[in-house]
Image 1: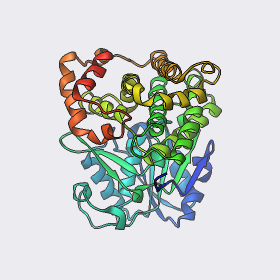
Image 2: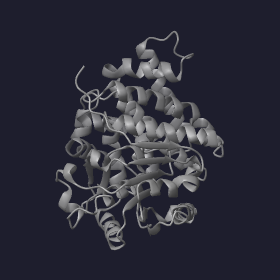
Image 3: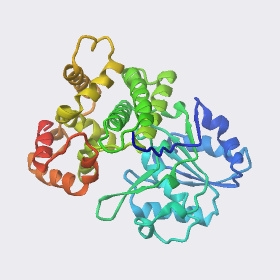
Image 4: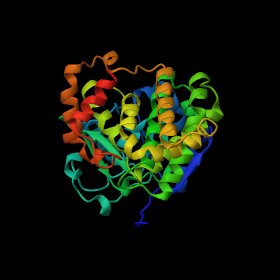
Length: 387
């Protein structure tokens, strides 16, 4: 076995209502005096910011709220968040919301260092940078951003830029399932399938697969799979929501230490060019990619199938179990209420060649980790399968 370097949060709390009950005390443990909450206006409208602010103020911590984060956060928005933290001399950064808010917070936590814009540090060695204490509080069970050391932001030309360094790993991941109770069905579905993809791609990574990630990916997928239909149909089930949130965090830890692959490679152009939410994009393309990978990855998909569908796979060989696994994921998508055809999302066959070229030319790093090499023609075929 080759050597392994593995990173994860120093402190993970999975407990309902923990933001209200524990945030202020946790901040005090890090000697915080002035905190910035990085979030978006949707989270503000749900009242979650008020809960966080009250908990911090009860511990005599000054609070600044930056609620201007948008999906796929542009560099200029991240720069504004950094300015807000600097102007208010914040010594604690809290990312509250989905992956975009948490990814923005990760970069804000670097604000004590001497740089003007994010553009100045995109290709810099950040290992020597100072980082402020960083808390991540997810409000969706999907991205796993609370447990990863990558931040994905959007450049002016629309391309995604990844800052990838253990330096930005959140110190505390606070998993409070009460914050996911108000999620509508379509967001619950998209984020849940996103988290499942993280587990599956982590487990089948060609380049960085490792036993620690494998164990977390298997357990994460099991928790997500077993609770998926429950949270879709009974969104107020706090136990199911808690399991989904923890499963998503386990998926995040798994994939950031192994990698994601071609599902993400095919999904990113859909998000950038057609504004399809990332989780929905992953859900759209996962089954064509997994089916394409069968010649190389069937034994691994079969291993996962036997964990999540033990009775259905007892008498099946690897290819049969792997195929059932993919077919069940396809059923999850079709029964979720999400649109599952590109044509339903205003994408035409004429758009596909350009999308396929973006995959191969821009996201080659994600093809490199996929179990099977992919050509531009094969990407084209996979997109056409879901037209």
